[in-house]
Amino acid sequence: MALYEHVFLARQDLSQQQVDALVEHYRDVVSSHGGSIGRVENWGLKSLTYRVKKNRKAYYTLMDLDCPPAALNEMERQMGLSEDVLRFLTVKVEKHEEGVSAMMQKREERSDRGGFGDRDRGDRGPRSFGDRDRGDRGPRSFGDREGGDRGPRRPREGVEGGAE
Image (cartoon, rainbow, N blue to C red; front, side):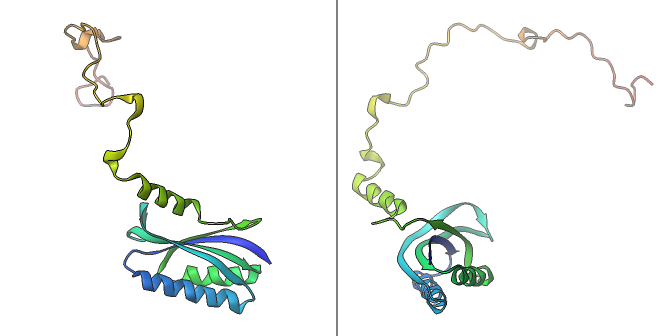
């Protein structure tokens, strides 16, 4: 059997229990075709980069699959028909990752770091743009720009009052 990593996005108006029920439903589909689902990670409700089927947020869920292609095809077919699933992506892998995924590691790092006020600004210093010396620019007018002395304008052809 082949190994896959599968991520799906569920609608934002579902509850976490409904998302878990979706996972259980797809677990039954895969197991009925001779496969199994290993690790399941709920990444939670996240903002989408752009609207997907009128949703601005979605519940992200990762599943490690060990199943034949027929089981995967049936699960993806049912996800495509479901109104609760916005998008899904399946990637074939050589072996499953040990431990938590990169998305869960990021979440743990954020909770260890604290809020925005705890971040070290390093050598960048304060954000100030007014302290740069721009020199004396002097007054500017339209004619100072390159190609600014164009002379009188000619009327366009085919326009009322223009040359014919």
